[in-house]
Length: 295
Image 1 (cartoon, rainbow, N blue to C red):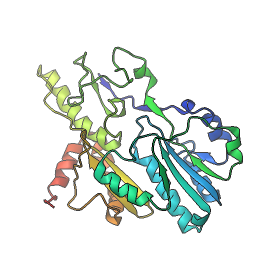
Image 2 (spheres, rainbow, N blue to C red):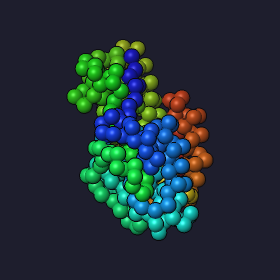
Image 3 (cartoon, helix red, strand yellow):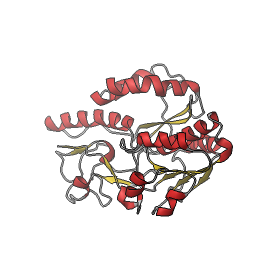
């Protein structure tokens, strides 16, 4: 059996958020398809005031998405002559804005002006008075492993994630069970690239079990997390369990780049559909490394 139940949004953990997303004109989130279009409407309707973007302290789907919407909003305001009327705040419940130091330094330079950043700050309640304030609030809701797994104590660890070995992705108690994707323990960034890398590991190890052998493939925690910093620029992050960069391309990926943005917009999506969802991401990584040279 392969556990691949993903994460669930825990909107109810922020008191008043569920009603605010439906009833408040200025509260939105891109993390639900129900409110994605509302998010863009909030940006278009914004005239002045505070633009607040939050990130919870729980593991979430693609950490950089909460940053991307903040950067894109700032760029949108600037392009539409609204920047001088906006006070943009990014509040994160995490200790660091990004787990990998080399990328964090670049992100902090980008966010320094005109965005204000506060660590270990996030929202736990939205009150009715928020609807009357000028500005907008974009909320990245807390998340947890899907209820069906979180409540199954035989298969989950104390945090509610699949209780699997971090390298082989095999369950610690039941050798015929493996974990895949966002429901695996939350020490790596939860992205589609991580799922793609894990799928090849699970495939090889399931074959080993069928042949009466021990798991032979090991997952190093690889994940890729492009951080779009505006319309046309991007930081292309790739790293492992140890938060060490493991980059695929022969240029500095830790700086804002139009080339990184081009790859994000025009190439990575095609690689996802043609390789990642088919469990061929290792082929994808090896192909890219053929063109990599020592810097």
